[in-house]
Image (cartoon, rainbow over all chains, first blue to last red; front, side):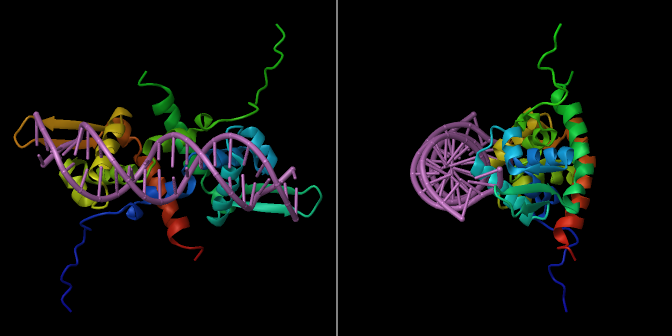
Length: 118
Length: 118
DNA sequence: CAGGATCCGGCAAGATACTG
DNA sequence: CAGTATCTTGCCGGATCCTG
């Protein structure tokens, strides 16, 4: 079996090969970072609370962002069968595991973004 | 001096308040992560080399991405006054300072994205 | 060789109205 | 209260042609 084209190094790359891209696709976008960040601080938030904390976001966008973060396993939705309805969002273990990264990002942005080269 | 409305906690947030967003805005997008990732590995790349390493990217998109990463201080462009022209891109110190974050992201994506809950 | 200029399509995001 | 449905918009990314 002649392993003809087997190189140790790939010759080219696509976005999907990049570990940064894989993560950014999940936690990136315009609002998801903020949602995760808030949930890291607040632990548990209702849908309405989030809309009040983030006045700029459109309902539809928040709704879809939450749904995607759910299906990516980052956060957990808990609905209470009450009237009026109550729904609480919190981070899953997988979501919590992002804390270390978030902390690093916070430090980096403080040191390299907010201070303009001093 | 009645510090009437002075709360310790802000009542609402915008995307710009979030440290994750600040960083993701710089290194995020479809191709920038890949560019940074490659430069972390290769140290120095010519424009044409990048297009060969990333066959999917459009010239204009690469061009603009590089320009933005420059103006954000992430990478350095060095042009040699030759014919035909030669241009080399490499990470700045600020760009290098992302390595720690990138490493964490790599680990996280390997542990939480690529293995689907085992 | 390293790009600039131009035109185009798609999807994310936004605004508003409505519902279980 | 916690969303959906619908319509519109804006920007990102893509393809092609052109140039110092």
